[in-house]
Image (tube, rainbow over all chains, first blue to last red; front, side):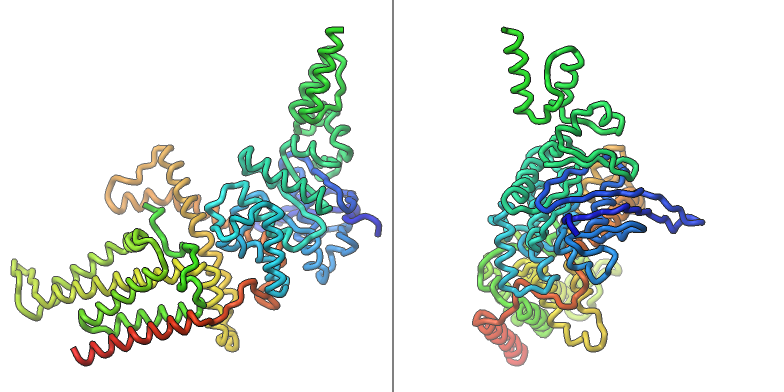
Amino acid sequence: MSSFIEINNLHFSYVNEMEEPPVKTEVLKGVNLEIQKGEFVAVLGHNGSGKSTLAKCINAINIPESGSVSVNGLDTKDEKNLLNIRKTAGMVFQNPDNQIVATIVEEDVAFALENMGIEPKEIRQRVDDALKTVGMYEYREHAPHKLSGGQKQRVAIAGVIAMRPQCILLDEPTAMLDPKGRAEVMKTIKMLNRENGVTIVLITHYMEEAAQADRVVVIDEGEVVMDNEPKKVFSQVDTMKNLGLDVPQVTQLAYGLKKAGYNISSEVITEDECVEALAEIFADKKA
Amino acid sequence: MIKDITIGQYFPGKSPIHRMDSRVKIVLTLVFIVMLFVADSMWGLLVGIVFTAFTYAVSKIPAKMILKSLKPIVPIIIFTAILNLFFIRTGNVLLHAGFIKVTDNGVNTAIFMIVRIICLIVGSSLLTYTTSPIDLTDAIERLLSPLKKIKVPVHELAMMMTIALRFIPTLIEETDKIMSAQKARGADMETGSLIQRAKALIPVLIPLFVSSFRRAEELALAMECRCYHGGEGRTRMKQLKTSSVDYLALAVTAAFFAGVIVINNFL
């Protein structure tokens, strides 16, 4: 027992019982992954690569076919650990509409705590704290369907952090949001990671979001194919394209410039770095 | 047109009625409904109207909400009125044309029934305006909890109700979207006979159904992720407590009810 999340040779298949004989689709084919406490890990992969399935294996929605998954030392195969694992690793889904249970913001945030059987006074305290953390406290008495997408997703995140989990799994939390909502959610996630030390596993399609993580894991055809710092992963532009993935626009730009013969680092992943690198090129030219 | 449905729409507020215990509110709403049916004269109903007006004034719900809640039942009101007008044949004849016969008794009964239905809908809507649906289902769960002893799944029913209420606005929004999408593809939902229009709704209902199942699956997953495991060992953030407001409301309602009975017997 060393890492916070330990995934050993994980295999998982979906079985379609409707077909005769039942059709088995193997989604995860031997995933090995270790995630440390407090890390911010982004998981990338094209559609159907198995990244969502992996997240569901971590919080015991999916039980491994073979291999093992343990969270904070708790094996997901053991039914006794179920609630404890879900308290430890909370999950946020893509569509905020489909994960909000209650008709009032604060009651939705309280839902998980009520399920856990916590004292009413303590629930009140935790709900207020969670709503303040995501900046939705003023909206506590609103109806969720009247909020914007970004606000709804922040409420969903509040519902999870009210459980005070050590880890939050986010399955494409920004996919259905507009740029403003996306920025709101990313800011919240980053703050939770930096200030509250929550371990974050972010599944995303947006390379700019992945670039903000400490570590990027790329999954393809049910296997981990890359696992490194964002800079190291994105600098391999051709490999990423072959996997059906993109790189941040600025990385693409730097890559193109390098190909064209300019002296620029290929490890450019944020806009600021890009501006700096470009300024250097212009300075060189002048000199 | 679809957006006008207001049942299950909660208006946050801090009025005495909002602060009442939702269990008491449900019981008093039932008492109010009984009161309307006990009242057998216009004077008795007047007490019901005054009671409704009084509760709305106390709750500070905007008057336009009353009209909104009445809109969907207009056809029912008209239907009831026509039925009573034409099928009550006692009393003095006011109008006689062929087989149509309208009597003064008919007119009186029609008006009486309309007023009763309006009072019924407006009065009971107040319950959902001033009580958040979760409070409401919570109250129903507690009121029915004795039934748990005879193995009625009270918690599960209450949960289902909460979720249904929660998804009404979402599904309405979705229906609107699908309708627009089908209209953009040339679907015609406004013209033609009733049967044609009903048929035109099929391409709206099928996608709505499919997406509801998808939503249900995702919601179930999200609930599981948040440690939902049935009603056992569940606590609630908001505890239901009766307070002085509830006793006051009880007294006021009792007074009105007594008024109706007095009017019934002495007028």
